[in-house]
Length: 381
Image (cartoon, rainbow, N blue to C red):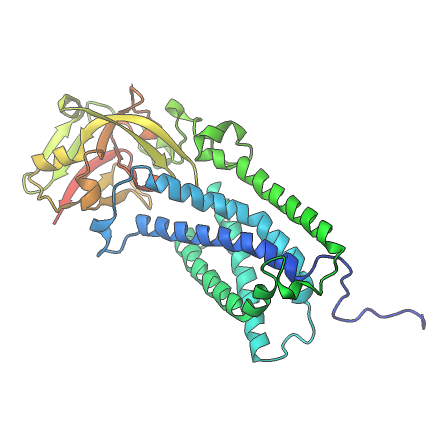
């Protein structure tokens, strides 16, 4: 017993490649993924919850804009998961440094790291669960995810400012700061980075097909395939879940409220001039799919109600309750000729899960705002 050595804090780390050069190399990739994820996530949040002063200026073109940005958001977030794990592996010995605080600068560094690591793990974990529509927490996902994203960005900027000299010293292979690193670690470092890169490529290729349809056959781990579902389109919320099943053509009525309000039966809607457009549904969970939609242009319905050219439109669903049963079309979307009250998809009458008897479809718009089972359009001044 007397000869036994007591283990004291901090623990000893004998693994190799836990150095600044390895951490900086991974950090370049991780920082790029975080930047893409944050910018596209900010765009998505504004599209879903536009401030009143911006609502009429959100563009409706390009029609595929939201599909691209949300696909990038989810893909970059998934790619960031193996990158973050690799980054933590490279730096974890420093997390146990002793003493924990040595100066004001060191305290700022430790604070930024604590917030950055905790916030990053939270964002990636909750974002990944959101793609599967699984919410095992008591808070609302969207506002909390959005708020924590800003905390992560602030912590990241503080961390970069504090670590700027060290990052600069190890940014390139020829940097003076790398001369003190063991030469024999070079091949191992390249092998480690290659494995990390392969991991990022693997998770990307097996999930990105949910939005980039040429790779749909490689989708192994994404919760949705873009070609699976009623009429070849995925469904997030079914008619049964929304409690709107059993709507008959005879009982359906569309109310168009405006300066000259009127009501249309389904037969009267079908008798109006029909237009066909090809538009994607791009869901916030990351999947998207294009389809041919046929229906009545919303701008024609507004013209019949005497709506002014600058008017917004409130779209209400027959769904009795739900966070997105009501949405608004800003001026750009409301008067875009591609925006339809769709009655058919891919040549077939809408399936109940796709919004029978009528649903909204508009360009460059989050899928959660493509209101299904529409029963009322209201012109807003």
